Image 1 (tube, helix red, strand yellow):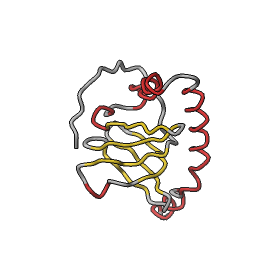
Image 2: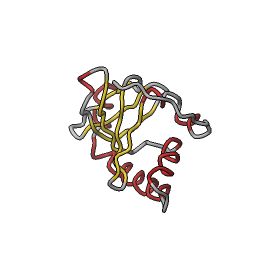
Image 3: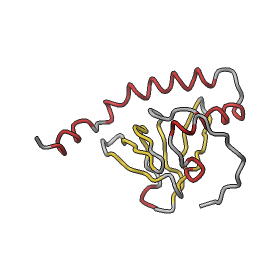
Image 4: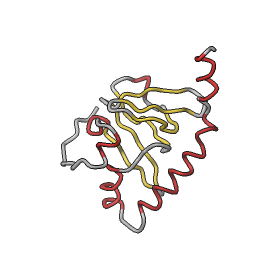
Amino acid sequence: MNTSLYLDDLCRYELFVPLHELWTQYINELYGTSNSFGFAQKLLKADLHGAIMTVSKSKCASYIGVSGIMIQETENMFKIITSSDELKNIPKGHSVFTVNIRDTVFSIYGDQFRCRAALRATKKFKNKPSIDL
C-alpha cells in the first residue's frame, strides 16, 4: 500500500472545516463574557486544534502569510493545513502567529509557547518581554 497517496487523501482542508467549527464553539464558550485581557489569559491554556492561524512574523520569510487550520501541535511545531490542501509544518520558535476571535486579533509568540499542549494547560505563565522579529 502506498502510504504517501493515503496521507495525501487525508490532508484536505475541507475535511478539517468541521473541526474548526467545533473549535469556534469551544472558544466562544471559553470567552464567555470576559474582556479581551481576561480572555488572553484563558487563551494561553486553551486547546488550539481547529483554530485558523496565520503566521504574521517569522525569521524564515517563506512562512510569513501562511494561513490555515491548525491540526496538530507538538512541543516545537504547529502543523497547519492551508486552504490549498497543503500541510505546512511551522516551527514555533522565531515565529508569531495570529488568531482572530470575535473580531479581536490575538498574537501568539511561538518562542513563549514552546511546550506540549497537555503541559500548557497546567503551566503557570510569567510575563516575559518578547524580542521583536
